[in-house]
Image 1 (cartoon, rainbow, N blue to C red):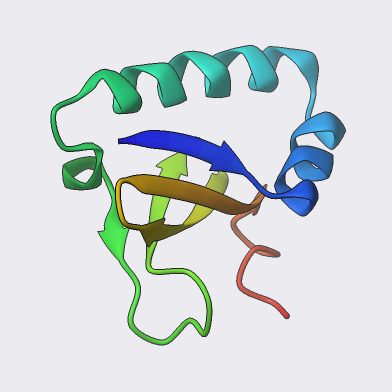
Image 2: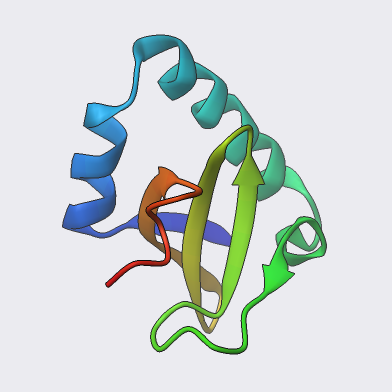
Length: 84
């Protein structure tokens, strides 16, 4: 499985501090190299678009599984990520 980013997720990433960006990149590569990256994720039931979420420090990464692709929808602080 591989990660792809939506435009809003790319903008969210650019707003993060550089140190967090580097750590996030390493963590995404680690998850992607895993045989099944979704074992590191939590399934979401009440969210309209996202199917799973990853946790990275105080940030949450909302993703949507589409076949063999994991599309990153949002990367935000935990207090803001679930707000519409």
